[in-house]
Length: 291
Image (tube, rainbow, N blue to C red; front, side):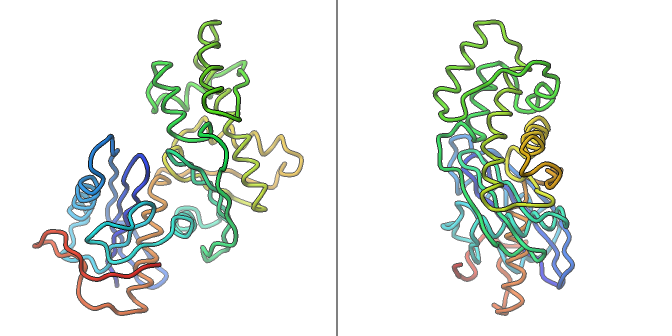
């Protein structure tokens, strides 16, 4: 049995899990996340990792794996690329998933994988930031609603307004004009979701996705966005009836989960020896490896 931690350092938040891995069996012992909010990233990483380690109530952690922007975390044992960790973490959360749509603060990507979580293909957004979590957060702030409210408000829309999907600046201008015209917040948010969903459906089409797609990343809990993505796929005759978009309460931790699982695999294969972290000592670097 191997105890591992996965730390996903994103543009907007840091997520960490501690897992117990024994061959093909894995379970999450603890998970925690924190927004960065202009703080020192390394300080946030140490805070989140320490909280996750304490919550797991373990004496040692055999392998500390990072992903995302966590290449330079000094106490990490190894680093894994984001597409591989989201694919493996997505498969853990939704065993039927054969693709993940990772919607992050600044970028989004679609990843196609097989039944073992091996990446077969991936594609990232290459246009403006109008399909990112940061863009949606900026719009919510302008509209005076919290991120937690966005999904339900969008689902309550009855006449969505079309929003530019090409450029974040144009989209924000569209929103300002809509507010001045008295368009409801619900219809504005649904219009934004539909604009984002159109781009995401193109991403999924470009990698040949089929079956179940799990939404991961910071916007995975946005029920309005998940519904809009499903609607966009259903309206495309090339996808109609072939794709099911799924969410999961722990989708935001998919990258961290995947990192922890791959970390356990590497630890068992290479037998690094010793623990990467002990409850009685501060975070220290035990060994180094790169992917």
